[in-house]
Image (spheres, helix red, strand yellow):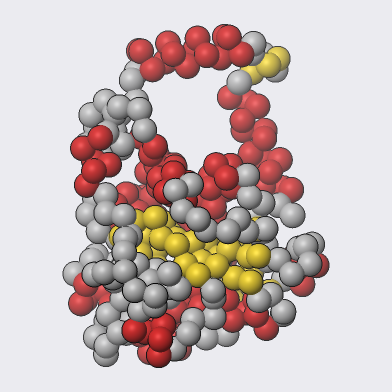
Length: 283
């Protein structure tokens, strides 16, 4: 389903553990890793301290600063003050996906990691985000999906940025969970404005009809697949909802949403980014 990506990943992993084209003995790999950590100990990607053992290459202090997205609406992952069966918005208007999971709330210091990876190409920050997500996911009872589908970038934005942040994160999550990825199932067929300065209605209009399903990729899916849509940050859910509608139009009904972080949506006429005070809450 994702053979080209898998072969690239395997080649990269093989290259890291070979010498002169020959695989290193496991004991040599362990020795080299230990020597490297002794000479150049890993540093916390947020504060630079030498971290204790734990997920995400963060020190204990920085990990404790992260805000888990709890409690949250089980349907859309909207942050809540207290546990509820559904948030008010989902009671009024059901989203086109069955459940959503966000590892953290989009707040300091996680927002800095997201920005470093998304806009500066900081690989260490991206790896940290994926590891944090996998660790939090392992603590939840979410059903295991058949496939992960990252929200695609339009080719024009991909050309400007040089990489697709949702795709790169999904690759690391695939490695951490063993869940296959279908990177080509959804296609962004038209360019859209950045969502940051738009209100809720504007965000919905902006992405309406922006996605299409690749039929060849759909035929490779198992019967009645459980699909997870993946993105880095969710604010109003407009982009992910439009992706889910595209899947539902071709008969894919069992859809979940996974994101690294959930920003509290401001469902008013004012731009979401302006109200929340978060510099470019991306979606």
